[in-house]
Amino acid sequence: MSVPKIPMIINGEPVQSQSGNWIDVLNPATQEVVAQVPFATLDEVDQAVAVAKRAFESWRKVSLAKRQAIMMKFRQLVIDNTAELAELISREHGKTLPDAEGEVGRGLEAIENACGITRLQLGDIADNVAGDVNVYTLRKPLGVGVGITAFNFPIMLPCFMFPIAIAAGNTFVLKPSEQDPSSTMRLVELAHEAGVPAGVLNVVHGGPDVANRLADHPDTKALSFIGSTHVGTSLYRRASEAGKRAQCMMGAKNHAVIMPDANKEQAINHMIGSCFGAAGQRCMANSVVILVGEARNWLPEIVERSKSMIIDEGSNRAADLGPLVSPAAKARVEGLIQSGVDQGATLLLDGRGVTVDGYPNGNFVGPSIFTNVTTDMEIYSQEIFGPVMCVMEAETLADAVEIINANANGNGTAIFTSSGYHARWYENNVNVGQIGINIPIAVPVAYFSFTGSRASKLGDLGPNGQEALQFWTQTTTVSARWFEPDEQSDGVNTTITMK
Image (cartoon, rainbow, N blue to C red; front, side, top):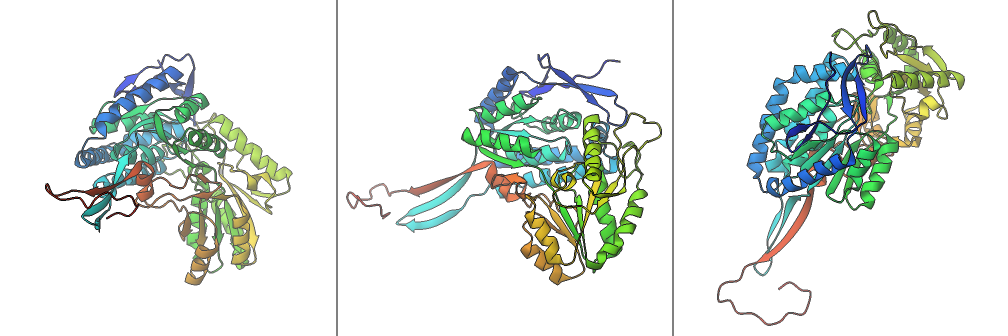
């Protein structure tokens, strides 16, 4: 049986790349080749940008109401096709179907935010700031935007980018992850079915050469990236040096604090779900749990409950976690587990060597839990991106916050407590961009911005919410006076004063 070849989308049409470099897209539970994806040539990248640049001239003039109507139809099409999108995610990423459906739901939140473009893209006006002078601002689109996404959320992450960008009047070139592109491609097809005109939304595939070309290209005006710190730092530098806007959401090491006054059952269940869900392949996963005071006595229950988690192929709706995305990811995670053992941490639960009936070649790693973890160990300093929990202990909440604030990353954190005082003190003293109070994964709803901080983010404006609209538009300020037909001049004014 022939393997589908993933096309690019240029000028609204599927285009087969002429590249000689194609890679296999694998089902992570079976290693079956389910598709092949090209690394586009640089000429093909340039073609996609040129098409988007031409389309911008007409798309930027389309009314806000028309753009809103397209976004609303797009939203409904995504709702109607949620099951198909989730199946594509699960087949190529490995996450469970319920988790994949949840991802589509979070993507829908971002599309719904873009549906509010008629409200979001309003300017301001001040009447009669000087004699018969009004000053007003306009939020104008930039031109060609670029989005480069990671593998772990192939629907949600593109939704953080292109819906609001094109709703604001920009055109777009998207480079999805080459590891699981099919769901992203279906999402783009739905956008065109909703009425996005040819050339407004284009897709190319590839690796570093393609990403760098998009960052350097003189006709791209803004770049949004979600992925590793190494790649994000490089792309941010390149894009900024080329004179364009950039926002890069990057690596993380998220901490969750469990206070002894927390609701015990809720705290344990939420921490396990946060750390091990999606096999730990979330940039907002709380992979470090700090047990404060008497909460350290809850560790045996955390371990026992983690042992009972169901590991299986993603189509099993009873499964808690599926396989990692690739054999390389599995090898890396298992290597980091071994480094924790070698560096002196205590491995209370070892997820290596997991076997799943019927899937002998799957990239499965089970829940793994370390205690006696110190901040100089690799399992603490590295973003493992696998189902590995590092448990630390602290005498006081202040001690826990000291550990968190000393970490370079600031993507997300959580505290579980029944004390409003403790929650407020934590909120005011922890130096992390996104805080959950009895919420394990503190990704806000999409009409608020994603606000990771410190080493987890480059750029002052994040995806989603009002910040996303600010990122994808340029403020133009107009000062205007209209004279009466026969109005007499007061003479030449050589001062800076507005009269």
